[in-house]
Image 1: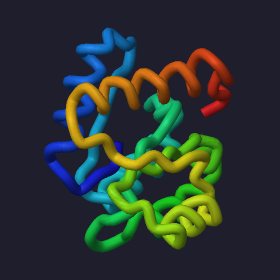
Image 2: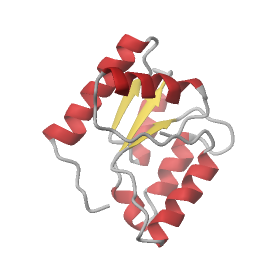
Image 3: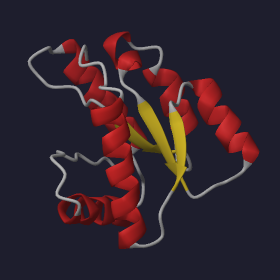
Length: 136
């Protein structure tokens, strides 16, 4: 997860626990640090890349859209599916996210029960229904 909010990963971790999902969540609250870490992992094959990235688009510095563009131009990183989590429902944000390479856009839940439902649905779709490509 890449999100400048310190609360979002806490909500997501709790939702994962409540939903009893087999998920290892790693969170970054600065997009530049997240991108640097992913590039380092890509260059050093002994580190595991994520199978899915949850990305906030409204962040200070490099926005989620900027990060998406950078990820989609980086070797194996371009293969990692990115799901945008946003509090925005502006059509421009949705279009920009899709144009930049997001696989889907989800409006951020506002309570733990909705978070649990959201992450359960994301998990079922990406890891049970379509079987994310494990090439990365």
